[in-house]
Image 1 (tube, one colour):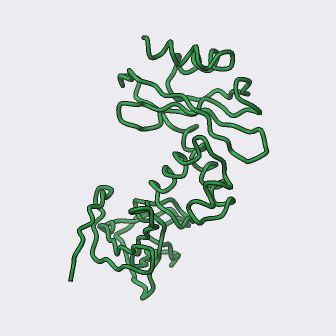
Image 2 (cartoon, rainbow, N blue to C red):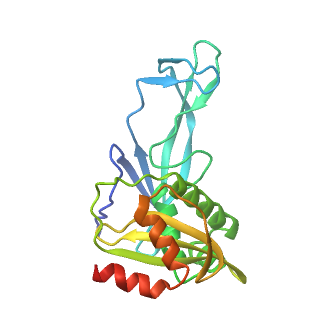
Length: 229
């Protein structure tokens, strides 16, 4: 019987404990270290973790493998507060609350949106356009709250626009550090390319505001100027 080895990049602390092929998809059983202490969401008291485990598993979407969807399954566990008896699920480090996909799946959706739109990306990934829209909103919220280290040296900056909705002239402009392929900020959201309604964002300080002022007039001139600098 032939065997195939799959190398998977994992977030820090996450490990794979099992694998199963199901149809055209890939399923990975994952685990991560549970916390020693937990703070109750209701009474805000922090105590030693009182962890209870359920027999069910949670499944979330992860990055595609060989053009096929992959999923992470993990054991459902929760902390029960010894004071108010409130039960809260342990949130894995690889996903946000109340979502069924990983952080890096969200980033994959953003990459696919470049040169595309919600409906096309949703059809390609087999998810709903509403899910794509929710991912974009969450990523935009993260970008607005993101603080870039003022000492960080950024030499190669990429600027691109995402079409947020098909047949709706709504775009978001993002900055990407080409050295590491990581987004460093959201410039703004507007009605059409080149005429964006920018919001003040605490992303990269004075240079960010300078970029926002220029990009509204001439995106290509700004891009070339940044690369020349």
